[in-house]
Length: 192
Image (spheres, rainbow, N blue to C red):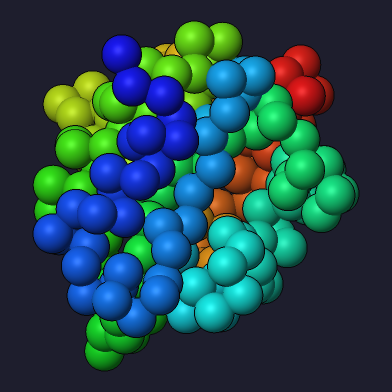
Protein backbone atom coordinates (compact mmCIF):
# COMPACT_ATOMS: atom_id res chain seq x y z
CA UNK A 1 0.00 0.00 0.00
CA UNK A 2 1.25 3.47 -0.89
CA UNK A 3 1.53 6.37 1.53
CA UNK A 4 -0.01 9.78 0.91
CA UNK A 5 3.50 11.17 0.26
CA UNK A 6 4.24 8.47 -2.31
CA UNK A 7 0.96 9.16 -4.09
CA UNK A 8 1.78 12.89 -4.09
CA UNK A 9 5.12 12.23 -5.78
CA UNK A 10 3.45 9.99 -8.36
CA UNK A 11 0.93 12.73 -9.19
CA UNK A 12 3.77 15.20 -9.78
CA UNK A 13 5.72 12.68 -11.89
CA UNK A 14 2.73 11.51 -13.95
CA UNK A 15 3.17 12.33 -17.67
CA UNK A 16 -0.42 13.63 -17.67
CA UNK A 17 0.79 16.45 -15.40
CA UNK A 18 4.20 17.04 -16.99
CA UNK A 19 3.34 20.45 -18.47
CA UNK A 20 2.43 21.69 -14.97
CA UNK A 21 5.41 20.06 -13.27
CA UNK A 22 7.77 21.58 -15.86
CA UNK A 23 6.48 25.03 -14.86
CA UNK A 24 6.90 24.24 -11.15
CA UNK A 25 3.14 24.07 -10.55
CA UNK A 26 2.27 21.64 -7.76
CA UNK A 27 -0.97 19.64 -7.52
CA UNK A 28 -3.48 21.49 -5.39
CA UNK A 29 -5.36 19.19 -2.99
CA UNK A 30 -5.22 18.14 0.65
CA UNK A 31 -5.39 14.61 2.01
CA UNK A 32 -5.04 13.58 5.65
CA UNK A 33 -5.40 10.26 7.45
CA UNK A 34 -7.39 12.14 10.12
CA UNK A 35 -9.91 13.51 7.60
CA UNK A 36 -13.57 12.83 8.30
CA UNK A 37 -14.91 14.95 5.47
CA UNK A 38 -13.85 15.39 1.83
CA UNK A 39 -14.77 18.39 -0.29
CA UNK A 40 -14.82 17.52 -4.00
CA UNK A 41 -15.04 20.52 -6.30
CA UNK A 42 -14.28 21.06 -9.98
CA UNK A 43 -10.62 22.15 -10.21
CA UNK A 44 -8.50 24.95 -8.80
CA UNK A 45 -9.11 28.35 -10.36
CA UNK A 46 -6.40 30.65 -11.67
CA UNK A 47 -6.18 32.57 -8.36
CA UNK A 48 -5.98 29.34 -6.35
CA UNK A 49 -3.22 27.94 -8.58
CA UNK A 50 -1.24 31.19 -8.29
CA UNK A 51 -1.56 31.35 -4.49
CA UNK A 52 -1.32 27.54 -4.07
CA UNK A 53 -4.37 27.73 -1.79
CA UNK A 54 -7.55 25.95 -2.91
CA UNK A 55 -10.87 27.82 -2.69
CA UNK A 56 -8.92 31.08 -2.30
CA UNK A 57 -11.48 33.25 -4.09
CA UNK A 58 -15.07 34.52 -3.73
CA UNK A 59 -16.37 30.97 -4.31
CA UNK A 60 -14.32 29.81 -1.32
CA UNK A 61 -15.65 32.67 0.80
CA UNK A 62 -19.21 31.60 0.03
CA UNK A 63 -18.41 27.91 0.63
CA UNK A 64 -16.90 28.68 4.06
CA UNK A 65 -19.99 30.76 4.88
CA UNK A 66 -22.25 27.85 3.88
CA UNK A 67 -20.14 25.54 6.06
CA UNK A 68 -20.12 27.96 8.99
CA UNK A 69 -16.34 27.69 9.40
CA UNK A 70 -13.49 30.19 9.50
CA UNK A 71 -10.64 30.31 6.97
CA UNK A 72 -8.38 28.98 9.70
CA UNK A 73 -10.51 25.86 10.31
CA UNK A 74 -11.09 25.37 6.58
CA UNK A 75 -7.39 25.36 5.73
CA UNK A 76 -5.79 24.02 8.89
CA UNK A 77 -8.09 21.27 10.10
CA UNK A 78 -6.80 17.79 9.29
CA UNK A 79 -10.42 16.62 9.51
CA UNK A 80 -11.21 18.34 6.18
CA UNK A 81 -9.70 16.96 2.97
CA UNK A 82 -9.92 18.68 -0.42
CA UNK A 83 -9.92 16.54 -3.57
CA UNK A 84 -11.01 18.51 -6.62
CA UNK A 85 -11.83 16.59 -9.79
CA UNK A 86 -8.49 17.86 -11.15
CA UNK A 87 -5.62 19.12 -9.00
CA UNK A 88 -4.47 21.66 -11.61
CA UNK A 89 -6.05 24.76 -13.18
CA UNK A 90 -7.44 23.52 -16.52
CA UNK A 91 -7.43 26.93 -18.24
CA UNK A 92 -9.98 29.51 -19.28
CA UNK A 93 -13.07 28.74 -21.33
CA UNK A 94 -15.53 31.11 -23.05
CA UNK A 95 -17.47 31.46 -19.80
CA UNK A 96 -15.68 30.37 -16.65
CA UNK A 97 -12.94 27.76 -16.60
CA UNK A 98 -12.44 24.66 -18.69
CA UNK A 99 -13.74 21.40 -17.21
CA UNK A 100 -11.44 19.11 -15.23
CA UNK A 101 -9.46 16.70 -17.38
CA UNK A 102 -11.12 13.38 -18.08
CA UNK A 103 -9.61 10.44 -16.25
CA UNK A 104 -7.88 12.51 -13.56
CA UNK A 105 -10.21 11.82 -10.63
CA UNK A 106 -10.61 8.20 -11.74
CA UNK A 107 -6.86 7.74 -11.48
CA UNK A 108 -6.10 9.55 -8.21
CA UNK A 109 -9.20 9.77 -6.00
CA UNK A 110 -9.44 6.03 -5.21
CA UNK A 111 -5.77 5.89 -4.20
CA UNK A 112 -6.07 8.91 -1.94
CA UNK A 113 -9.40 7.86 -0.42
CA UNK A 114 -7.89 4.46 0.45
CA UNK A 115 -5.43 6.34 2.65
CA UNK A 116 -8.19 8.23 4.47
CA UNK A 117 -10.09 5.48 6.32
CA UNK A 118 -12.04 7.82 8.62
CA UNK A 119 -13.96 9.62 5.85
CA UNK A 120 -17.65 9.76 6.76
CA UNK A 121 -19.02 12.23 4.20
CA UNK A 122 -18.04 13.49 0.77
CA UNK A 123 -19.29 16.93 -0.26
CA UNK A 124 -19.99 16.95 -4.01
CA UNK A 125 -19.82 20.49 -5.36
CA UNK A 126 -21.15 20.90 -8.88
CA UNK A 127 -22.04 18.66 -11.78
CA UNK A 128 -18.60 17.13 -12.39
CA UNK A 129 -18.22 15.85 -8.83
CA UNK A 130 -21.81 14.63 -8.72
CA UNK A 131 -21.48 12.90 -12.08
CA UNK A 132 -18.36 11.03 -11.03
CA UNK A 133 -19.48 9.96 -7.56
CA UNK A 134 -23.25 9.56 -7.96
CA UNK A 135 -23.25 8.26 -11.54
CA UNK A 136 -26.76 7.02 -12.43
CA UNK A 137 -28.09 7.85 -8.95
CA UNK A 138 -28.24 11.52 -9.95
CA UNK A 139 -31.60 13.09 -10.65
CA UNK A 140 -32.44 14.57 -14.06
CA UNK A 141 -30.37 17.74 -13.43
CA UNK A 142 -28.16 19.39 -10.82
CA UNK A 143 -31.03 21.33 -9.24
CA UNK A 144 -33.04 18.17 -8.63
CA UNK A 145 -29.98 16.31 -7.33
CA UNK A 146 -29.27 19.08 -4.83
CA UNK A 147 -32.96 19.39 -3.89
CA UNK A 148 -32.97 15.66 -3.07
CA UNK A 149 -29.70 15.75 -1.11
CA UNK A 150 -31.19 13.63 1.70
CA UNK A 151 -31.35 10.63 -0.63
CA UNK A 152 -27.52 10.56 -0.70
CA UNK A 153 -26.83 11.01 3.01
CA UNK A 154 -24.80 10.20 5.01
CA UNK A 155 -22.07 9.31 2.48
CA UNK A 156 -22.62 12.16 0.00
CA UNK A 157 -23.92 15.71 0.21
CA UNK A 158 -24.47 17.31 -3.23
CA UNK A 159 -24.26 21.10 -3.53
CA UNK A 160 -24.44 23.70 -6.26
CA UNK A 161 -21.11 25.46 -6.91
CA UNK A 162 -20.72 28.52 -4.64
CA UNK A 163 -19.45 30.65 -7.56
CA UNK A 164 -20.67 34.25 -7.82
CA UNK A 165 -21.79 33.23 -11.33
CA UNK A 166 -24.51 31.14 -9.64
CA UNK A 167 -26.16 34.16 -8.01
CA UNK A 168 -29.16 33.89 -10.35
CA UNK A 169 -29.57 30.18 -9.50
CA UNK A 170 -29.55 31.01 -5.77
CA UNK A 171 -32.21 33.69 -6.22
CA UNK A 172 -34.35 31.35 -8.31
CA UNK A 173 -34.02 28.53 -5.74
CA UNK A 174 -34.46 30.12 -2.26
CA UNK A 175 -35.12 26.67 -0.77
CA UNK A 176 -31.40 25.96 -1.10
CA UNK A 177 -30.25 28.54 1.46
CA UNK A 178 -33.39 28.15 3.58
CA UNK A 179 -33.47 24.34 3.83
CA UNK A 180 -30.27 22.77 2.50
CA UNK A 181 -27.61 25.04 3.99
CA UNK A 182 -28.77 24.61 7.62
CA UNK A 183 -28.60 20.80 7.17
CA UNK A 184 -25.21 21.14 5.50
CA UNK A 185 -23.87 23.18 8.43
CA UNK A 186 -25.08 20.55 10.89
CA UNK A 187 -23.25 17.85 8.94
CA UNK A 188 -20.05 19.93 8.89
CA UNK A 189 -20.21 20.56 12.63
CA UNK A 190 -20.51 16.83 13.32
CA UNK A 191 -17.28 16.14 11.42
CA UNK A 192 -14.92 18.92 12.47
